[in-house]
Length: 313
Length: 252
Picture 1 (cartoon, chains in turn yellow, cyan):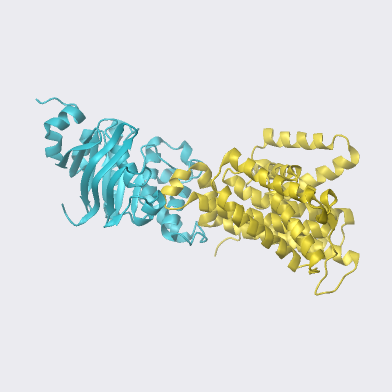
Picture 2 (picture 1 turned 180 degrees about the vertical axis):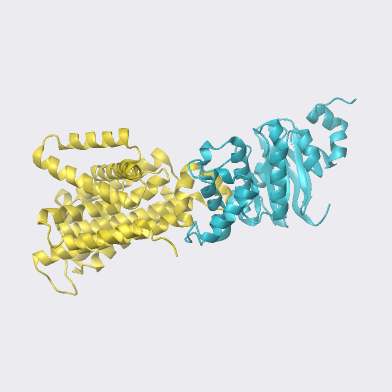
């Protein structure tokens, strides 16, 4: 009999607790959790690439593609199903990820980062110039429906929250499994020594392509959920500061566990919310100091800080 | 020769601009032969291994492994066919544990191209790799990151990883370089015992003539990109041109 996997147990417990908490939490907390979990899903994809030593500085591209795919399908084709729409976001981002991946897999380090940034800014420019998509203002996303039914505002919000919690836990479990497979374990191997991977009979570029598509799919799904929850999309979703925030969260979180990006994203969301409220003029400075402290004292991110305290306990 | 040729190299030539790294190399290696390559620095030993394993591309010539042409294939294709190598400077995953290094090597050897989605640390694979760590006598370093273990352990790990595939042809690039003189024989004994179990054909590059005499049944001497002599160890090591250009011992 094998001991139950602690990460799996923690995730299942988190799912139960979060869904139950959804009935009691004030609306600002529900919004914060939805946005944070969605951002955590994107950071999870970045974490996988980060383990190979790759930083995509343009992950907002797929985040925005997921959001705009949902917005367009909902607006133009009148598809508003709450289950179908996120899948559309995932599909759109995945297709783009597969295509761009053929180019990205040939680059490493700063070139990989800058190329991904370039693609995201290209998309941003495209959105800003397209007047039918509202240019810089973007447009409102229709309220999602369930089996063709339109629910109350409160019920819709709870539903989107539960859907986001379920998605976050689901993808965390999926990525946790992936990281234990042969392909998944090649991430660190690739960072350490690509030549050896090649001489063991596997194509390093294939690993990078798989990771890139995985990251794209996760970001697309998260973008779709965010678009539905916020009810509005605009080009800032694709802007480089959005990508920067996502990289920020990934570094803040650390790569030790699939739970880390969600914790990191939540901490980021909390700092952002409260700093904005109490110190609106210096909230970015507070974020900067927080990241600086993490890098100086816990170079492995928040997760390594948690692990260290657990060892001590 | 003890069997049909595993490797047949014909008129292999490699030019780097004006420098001749390999010139008209003809050599064939039979199943389960243990061949030692000797030569001074720059004689073309590593270039030869790089050409056969696809790291460098020849200017001319052919390399056939069990009748299949290797020229034009990538290192990973050649590895999958069963031609594997270890490196003069060990190529390991430095931040991963010794066991994880071996698990990755065996995982990739087992799974083939499309089946990377099996769990890496399956109970069978962990047991098999732990057994190998004992064969190579590095089990004490099982959970240490490869970056911090002694050089000799890293060399052995590199060789163990290279033999993950049912390697029918294995190249060892200076297996005892960087190892203290008094430990060289012990290391080679471990390697040769492990390889005998795998029934591998072995080609190893070596500078230490004592090692060559003890372990190589056949010796190929390189000089300036050409094969100077090829045959049983005693004959080649006694050859006057080999003595002059390679081993450096003057005729008595």
